[in-house]
Image 1 (cartoon, rainbow, N blue to C red):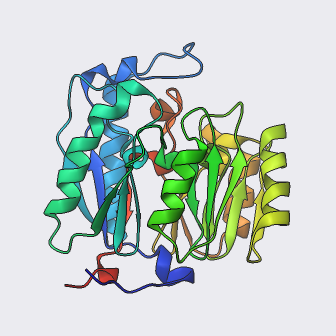
Image 2 (cartoon, helix red, strand yellow; image 1 turned 30 degrees about the vertical axis):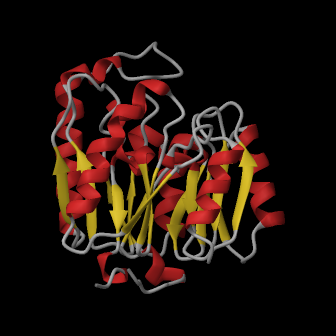
Length: 283
């Protein structure tokens, strides 16, 4: 299967998103801090709004059925990395999440224009997609508790046309909990020490030049770029100062997407969809 290799803004374009509904056991999802209880019905409403917002941005949404055995299953980003005409099905770093992979693999195969699917063949390799930041020009990867060096090697083998640079992520769940794309060649970065260390590493090791939007907390830095639109959490979730900075600096249309219940279980706006550009797939 041959595909078109895009770079820059065209590489970040998406036509299709895969999402997964919220199970009732979502209240038991993995989290670093268990002090805040998830309000289940609110979480379901927030995901419904998220899906509707994707559709308003011209994205066809494929919604997978929920699974009451898998509390973390709405976080589909972690089980597949799709760039252009290829998809890497991951081996998530936490063993409890590995049963989420099969449904994603079948969903990718069933697309009308399906990407070529690659597997993590090394049994010692693991990766969460939340650690993979594709800029449209190169790939940054967080080596976290969920992603190891062999996982990074597998990613680089799958997407050889893009430079792959890895950074340590020690105290945060994923790289994209610290930094995300908020526009073409523009990266939003959080405000704690680890985020600042990541920012400095990006500036010194990136192969291309980017504009950085610095925010004072990590929750604000996780945004979702969708065809020139930027999903951000509202000011009452990320602080009105951070919200105002994003509104001022981001060049695309900023769309408020409440996501408080997902953040309670370390979920981010990027976590709940796998974005695919089927225009990059031919055949």
